[in-house]
Length: 102
Image (cartoon, rainbow, N blue to C red; front, side, top):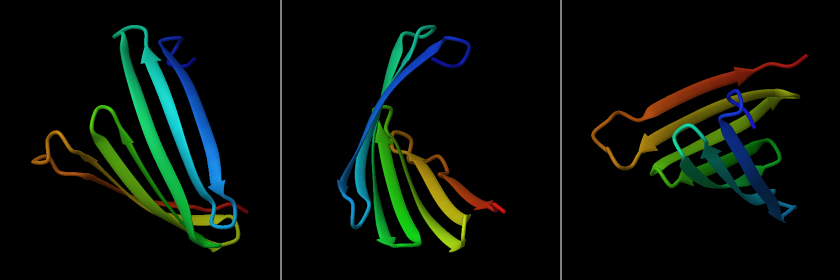
C-alpha cells in the first residue's frame, strides 16, 4: 500500500527467456478513494548485453516505451515516450534520463 494507504498494488513478473532477458509482467492497482482499478501489462527484451527495450500498456489506454543503454558500468542513458491512445491529438510525453552511479 502507498499514497498514504489509498493505493494497493499487486504485481507479477516472469522471465520468459533468460538468454535475451525477455520478460513479461502485470500490475494491478486499486485506488480506495476513487474505487478505480488500473491494470498494466508490460514486456522487456535485451537487444544486447548493454541495451534493453521495454514497453507497457494499461487499461486507461496509455502506452509507453523506452530504450535504455548502459554506456559505462552502472551508468544508464534512457529515452522514453508515453502516449494516450484515447486522445491522440494531445502531444505525447518524451523523456530523457541519465543515471550515473559511482
